[in-house]
Length: 249
Ligand code: IPE
Ligand code: IPE
Ligand code: MG
Image (cartoon, rainbow, N blue to C red):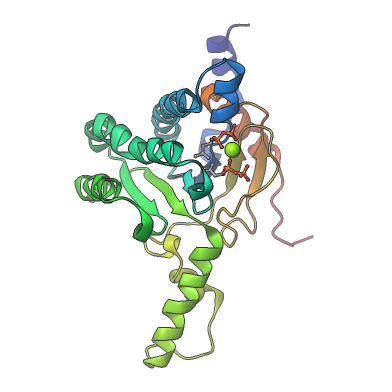
């Protein structure tokens, strides 16, 4: 069966009324994809951007409400400068070519992460994306850039401590109140229903540690540049076969 036929078959099997509202993806394996082809790592990242284009379009088509993409972690600064620079050029490149289509398709761009260490041109590209899509009411396309879950939680604790000190909030803090101080709290994003990680690594690498408490996890050995619609449909289909119990019997 060719991939188009497989896609149609999976689309028929999927319950379109039970699409996971928030899908988060750890896009991994660009470097290995390139190495296996005798190409520089940058070629893997470049192809990875093509996958982002395709998966964003398809997620929107499927009716996913929030798509969070892990694009650069707080630990990725440990990579060689040329690679960091290359990765830092991608948000601008992607948004430059895709923004008109995102605007047209009612997609709202969002950002989570620490702006402080991000180069000016990255912040400017993000701000343009946020600004031009701020009135859109469709899918939220949430980029995690210079994102680390521990940094996010510590930052939330700092902001909370400051509000307690100023008497804005009491010390009797609830989970809901704490959540509101996380990056994801700003837009009141729901927790991910489904987490996908590509490339055959089975770890969270400091991604959304708080928000993933009850998410369903889906792993594939496929490298991110090879990830396609079929893989996304497969992940959603598998998600729909699972029983989410949230501790209940
Ligand atoms: C994912 O691919 C992209 C980022 C982490 C920015 P990698 O660059 O981690 O690729 P591998 O894991 O080395 O194959
Ligand atoms: C996680 O991938 C970060 C992103 C996908 C942006 P890494 O490749 O950095 O993770 P580790 O180092 O294998 O855990
Ligand atoms: Mg990796």
